Image (cartoon, rainbow, N blue to C red; front, side, top):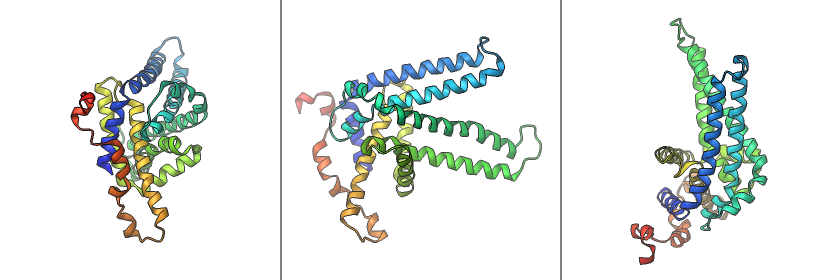
Length: 276
């Protein structure tokens, strides 16, 4: 499955390159605007020093929520492309208002996870190994380990959140619950998705966010969930299997139609499709 998923992601991003380029530019403009406001007000003499932390806190929260709304607005296109359809800007525009509620909820949750990471982890690390050279406590190490793994598992599980919303339309609580279920049921695949996500981040950095970026990574994860659902459909039509039998998923058979639909897509077809 992983090899086909990787290939399909590349083909989908290539076939819809200009669409994702335009939507990524919109997201990046918003992201850079909030980054500028964050840096400006964190040092601005226009705001009293006692209130700077509060101001930048709300700027970061607003940026997280607004970007989340825009990413969820692109969800309809991600689902259509994953189903061998095409992406259109009008779908993105029409889906902005319906995505406000779920986008604000996800943005708030993601912000809280980030806040816990940046505040709790350094705090408990300092309890374990104090910066002043004094003797630390084992409690600090224990709490550091607990928070670290809780955050890591949550970040990995959240890779499934937006695809679940895109393909199933569930509300926030159901998406969050299913995200953790999918993580624990497909831990190896989720970790591979995380590694591909890191690759996408590297590509995004070197392309200044024009390639991959938020929406490219969302499409990759939506493709992963769409293919993974074939496994659960297979479970439903083959009840009563043992745990060992459930591990032997016949991916070649389940993906046969998708492979045929995608086609061989050799290197020449990407740059000279008219010669195929």
